[in-house]
Length: 74
Ligand SMILES: [Zn+2]
Image 1 (spheres, rainbow, N blue to C red):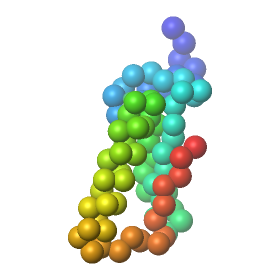
Image 2 (image 1 turned 90 degrees about the horizontal axis):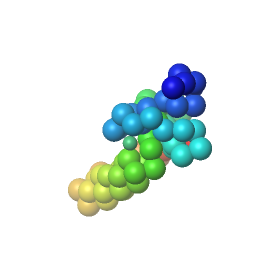
Image 3 (image 1 turned 45 degrees about the horizontal axis):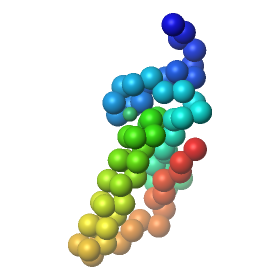
């Protein structure tokens, strides 16, 4: 059992995930980071799918994408 920093848990499911497998997603608006999530591969795939679905819905509803918002995946 180690409490090394590379074994931080996934923010979504709480399972411990190594740096090699995890993805860190940063959501930024106006160049400031508003949300950072460390996710295991499964939760990352779900997160991206949900995000894309939301973007699609917003576009369908006529809401313009905020040009200053972006997601960064490390
Ligand atoms: Zn997870």
